[in-house]
Length: 375
Image (cartoon, rainbow, N blue to C red):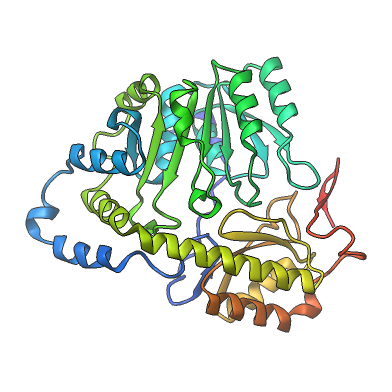
């Protein structure tokens, strides 16, 4: 038997969405639950012809179009096959076996996944009891340890919490020779960005995706932004045809109709407020979110609650597989009708939800101990 590299043998399998999600209320993977701008679908149908399908992708015009939309120069960006591909690109370019990645915990597991594939090791710093990033611990670690790169989702997934710009600045300044990736997949819902900082900090990489607010998850389209000195080696090691023509075309059309996206994100923010008010009224703890989802603590019967919701064709993300997030469900915020239906079903399952004593006294707060997260 031919053995793989040790890094692959020791790799934990990533948990993708379950099969058979079509036709269900998908509140589990933070997708757009309404749909992309209808003009994108019409353009896609027109483009599906033999000439288009037989031609290799061409990128220059699309890159210029997206660069103008994001207010950067074409040489300051790389097109990627979704944010996952951008993360892999960082590892392919900068990570050798033994190199260290520094991440908060909990966070998006794909950073560590691709870093492990490259043979790296991971340093984790846990969020505090209110799921705030302990920036001083990050800075201290960067000054003490040899860290190759830092990955920060902002807003963070699965917590939905926002990292203050002051904390990001201190981290960037603490290790100018360390690559700092700030993943802004949920920026459309938070409204905060540090994308212009790529011209101020040569060690900064910012990523964006069309999978969330723009509703193009099936096409896998993302962008990576950085100083041209970082872009050049990233492009050198990239798959020459990483992004397919249809994905790039649809992204370029979607930004022409971004008023659809703005209306959608405004609706999601309003529905997020409504969901959180409902959780408050029922003394159910949650983490205040700047994204299109809410991480909620329902207690040790979280897997059962997720299963019962699935039987009603409502899919939510159960985080109980993470030893530090046992008892937590993450709800993607959908349309008003979807949010009302979720709350109605949760009301029906209220007898299974464990609310802590004095929940209002520690409203929206999650308790932490050295042993891990608990209620």
